[in-house]
Length: 254
Image (cartoon, rainbow, N blue to C red; front, side, top):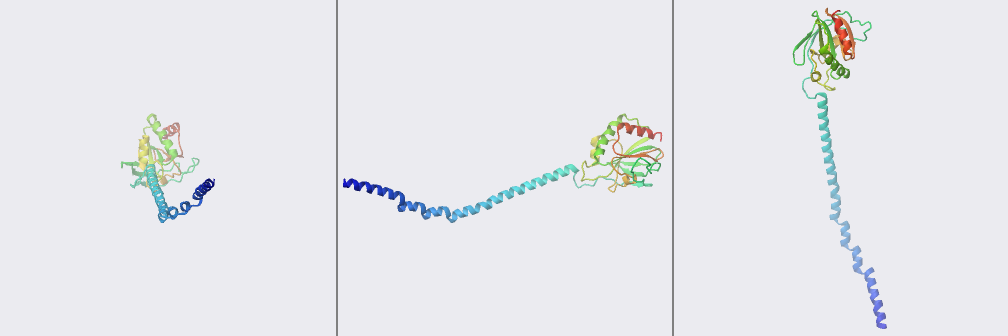
């Protein structure tokens, strides 16, 4: 009995002490190696070195994205405005004669009966084009490539022309003016060619010398002239094919 009582307590005490407070167990929790695992310089260095690497990668990516967006924007703008650094698509026309007053309304237009200014210029391909008082009546249409109403009116005239009853003594002319490479639908030559425009075109200059000489206030702008070279009527805005036909036919009798 004494051996048994000595053996059991002795055995329990040893196992209990070893499990709770033996030096080896204490070392497992507080040994320098464990502390080193958490706070060693190498570990600190590993954590301090990673943020710069993470910062460098996003900066590089952002820079690449910004550059790509910039290039795309330049391409889009270039395509939308005609782009390029070539000469502006304008001419060097010469205007002679008195300038017509600025058009404001058809009622009591002071230009009615006045002789029109004469214009000597060229088409987009350099072909000479003149609008003069040569004994023939005329319809002169002023358009700007960026004008939305002009873009609607040009197809109407293109469709009207093949079947139009145009008197033999009446000529139809176009003046391309208000040219601006930064605005839509540039250049005007490409726009008119795409629409199938066949009427002779005079290129105005950058100062809109021809447009100003005829008193242009807005686009599109029509000036109808009789066979003596005098202004019959002036109009702004779009016209129907029927109205065009009526006015052009009427020029033969003016």
